[in-house]
Image 1 (cartoon, rainbow, N blue to C red):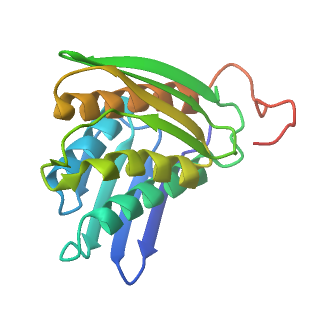
Image 2 (cartoon, one colour):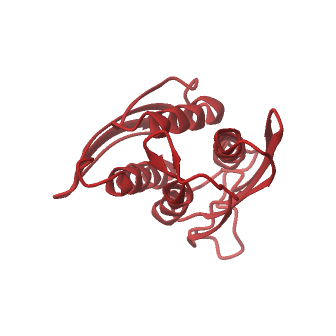
Length: 195
């Protein structure tokens, strides 16, 4: 089993993202995006997926939070894709439910190589801290596109938007943890023999 550790940098006129990702870590995370709620969610994702993640972003927060949230998700998704390589020997599919108090979220992921995101969070507030609620869903969509994965995330119930969002990230983490894990076979889990 080769090490699945990637260092990745994404630099544009809007953001500079640097990260190191270990898919076979212990859930240690250092995340500094300039957006506290995004830091909290990406830390929860790494913790429960058991990814070791160091991510730092310098973004154009004087504009708003959009570019930072999007580019952090794109960078993380790209790193996941690179760390998976040809995706040989992985389970490929993962699904999980995660509660957070009154909230309940479900995530189903397929490391298919075909990006798609179906996201229904039902957030009602405009902002969670300094992160626009519309960008919470956008983070999941960007993560799916850059990781070349099919991702369905649904919050099934909940009254508190913080809890709804956090449950969604935790469910996604648990589903990813399953999908990237190795099974007993050393093949590419597809009838196409490629992912």
